[in-house]
Image (cartoon, rainbow, N blue to C red; front, side):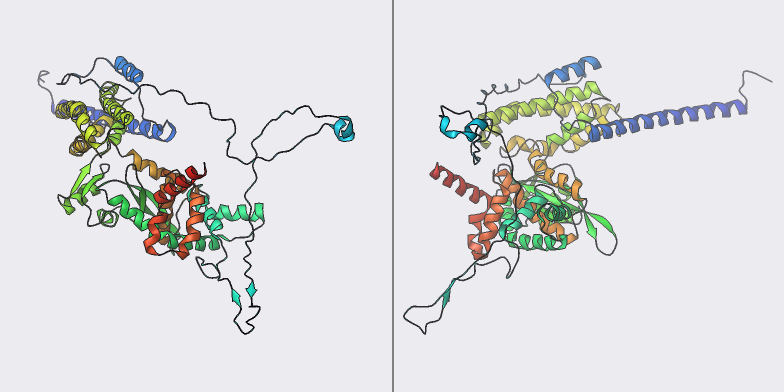
Length: 511
């Protein structure tokens, strides 16, 4: 037997070992990716929600990870200086000055016993912040009948009954406003409101009755909702996002997943649109057929498909917050590269902060972005292309995923450079969605599919009030009182923006 010539068995064993080694390497690679995904999920659920990384953290991240990435980068363009620190505001009063005062005088016992023997020489005043629970009341409308003193045959006169949201309806506008604010602003499901009213106020209001009243209010508020939506879409620039919400499927004993699509005008109003799916076709109802302009969105493929269907009249703008978020999730597995890229993105945000501090208009914003932001974006793009071509980052790794996402959105991420109206990210519309996320944790599902549309209407009104600094309860109580006497032409007078403007004018006149 010639020992120099491997036997068939030895060759087979060597091939088996090679195969097992390849399988082991693949398993280790998969295990690493799964661990990274689990770590990212744990951080997302239990970690801080902020993605802010200050300069000191970035420098530490890069120092611990070694030298900066070797890449063909252009000279660093000096970022705009951070705005000077604002002077400290005067300390607010310990108790709000606008609150009504209830005085309670406490006399010493000797004075109460013999007041004639004492003379007051002064007083000491201390204050506490107190609260009285809201109360129900019976609003009784008394309409007196009159007959003429001399014209005895004349028909008696009586004041007409004020117009109501519904004939012989039990709830007054104040109660309807409280129910809506309780559910859609304070996130109290109707069954909890039912318990509160019964246990604390001894007023039994079944949740089915409350649901009918919500439907009644939403129907009356629909014209306001439609005009808000029209106003948001009229400017030619809108931010769009969507969030999942479960709804009840009658007869099936289970819930299905629907979506609240959100359209926001930076510095203006916001609207919600209910749909039972996330398909591209839903955008036909969100975006009017007559709309031409810029839609700012994330990388969801439905937006690109929608823009392709509509043609050249639609321009997509990307969101740098989504790009930053993905590199932020990759900072632990790839601290050197992710840290450097986060630093470059941070330069973009500093430039925007400086522009906001200057209250720059669209033209100035576009000019500054062209001179300062564009070189940074081009530098990021060159590095990402080199990393992608090098093939050293696994596509399914956190950094590989972030690179693919950024490169896939690179054209839309540059839209804001030439259009000064467009923001750097989509955070304003995401902020508008947050109240719905808090609410669905409390009420789990929104009701049936029709309840989704009603919720979209009321969420729109509530969020527009919040953006205008308006108390939603005061707004809803006033508007629901006035709507039965109004025509469609008068609806613009009670939009949240117009209502807030009128309130501020009245406050200035009475000040």
